[in-house]
Image (cartoon, one colour):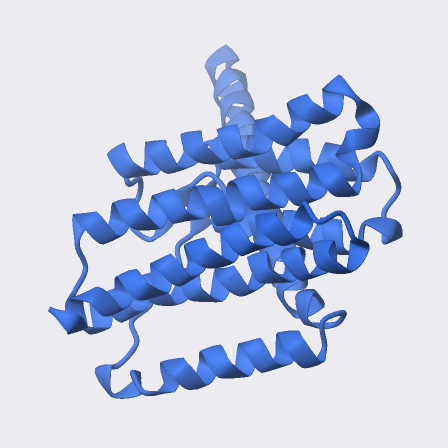
Length: 241
């Protein structure tokens, strides 16, 4: 019974970080908002581990899947949106509220669709909320680097990608040997230490692959669309001959 509960502990840890991120953000101090964004990014590590640990321990269940979705909407949907609102979106008045609400709404739709339509084996349909939330948290952390309009526009694009039909590779089901289970606490400890010692540099390590992941899906979708259009044009030309 204890063994089967271990994956849910990772999921609840992810949820706890999301709640803590919201509480830190609403303190209003820039330092706490930065910490809140970092907690969202650390939550990604736990989210990536819970499923792998469940498969490694043969403890995967429908309960765990639903708990994971509910945790994700808080940590990677609501928390990054609240952080972004406090950082920049509050300056946009009612439009800022709309954009703030749009992101977790699209995330909830994405998770609900995944629950009833798992999609294509080896792929996600739509950008996973975990990746979208991680990118958004990093946007908030480095908001001073970006032009003012980039952040709300980027947030809208991420919202669209979550509910789109674009395919993204699913790396969550990459197996981990049972013998490697003891490494998991070491990974978590190392990540926590890096986040604590290098809070300004740690998110950059996560941000670059996440942005490339989001761009990869867009690139593949555009290439597929161009191929389909080229195929139709060739068909029309052949039909006229």
